[in-house]
View 1 (spheres, rainbow, N blue to C red):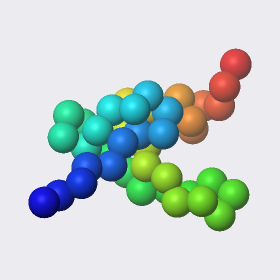
View 2: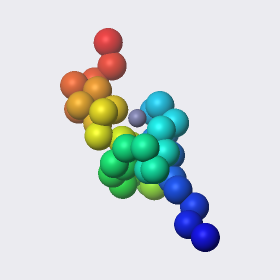
View 3: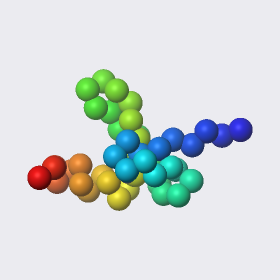
View 4: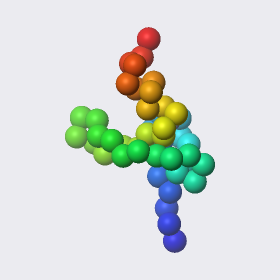
Length: 44
Ligand SMILES: [Zn+2]
């Protein structure tokens, strides 16, 4: 019984794409590898 996490940015689950654990303002989150570059470059 594994519960898959989801990307906080796009909602993709770890079943579909690799997720990375991260932290924002003390809150643990997961972000997928596709959204990570967006976060690195910042929002427009
Ligand atoms: Zn994502």
